Amino acid sequence: MRKLPLLVFLLFTVGHSAKAESFASHMLDSYNQSGERSKISEKLCTEKDMEDPKVLFNLAEVYWGSQQSRDEFKAYDYYLKAADKGHPDAHARIATLYAKGSSAVEKDPKKADSYFKKACDLGYKWACCYVSDAKKCGENYFNSKGDWADFLFLNNRYDEAYDFIMKNRDSSDSKLLFYRGMFHEKGIKVKRDTDKAIYYYEKATAAGLGKAAYRLGILNLKKDEIKSQYYFEKACDLGYKLGCRARYAGVFLDHYAGI
Image 1 (cartoon, rainbow, N blue to C red):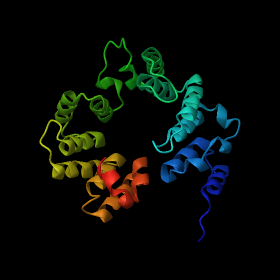
Image 2 (cartoon, rainbow, N blue to C red):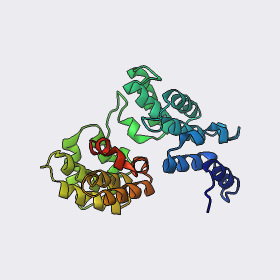
Image 3 (cartoon, rainbow, N blue to C red):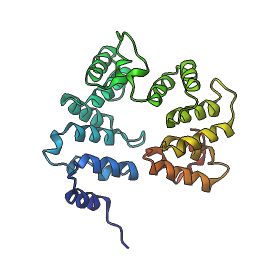
Image 4 (cartoon, rainbow, N blue to C red):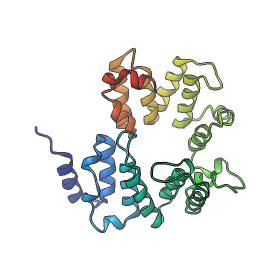
């Protein structure tokens, strides 16, 4: 059976959706699965869509894309438009751009602080932890124990992250399981142990975390390519974009093995 081109599929499914979802949902879902940004753009959106902050934010995410296909100027433009319409995630994204600097904007700590504060005010709680005059920031600012562990680990607060994760060692939270695997894989706070890393990544994958399946794909890349591709496919199915791009990583073995 001949496959419909992605563009035709999008137009058909959007036009016949019983739930009348916005184009953004279809675009982002399709982009996550295909990585074909060139076929998914604002040209698919109606004027009404372009007034929707969720659509604008998702367009920004599409243009942010991967490092190889990124258009930071277009992404920043849409993040800005979404932020102007009150999208909290967009304020957080812009804050991050100003905090780090990019080709689209120069590093500006004051602007970063302003956007983080706005994101915080709009309910994007983790942003509250980045506001310069934040009085306190803790687990209660986040939606789950896993999100708090995310914050600690990604900000290199490894001692706190490890203590928190071990305090909740009986939790079935997929992110807590993932970071237990990460500690063992990288040798952070514990002795490096790939077998234990795989054990926790498998548990996190079973709990539905795509990036855990991706790590399993990476760890199996050199020793079992079939198993590696299985886990990349699994990561993709669970919505982790890097898994979708790494499905055919055999030809890029050296690159992926270094991740």
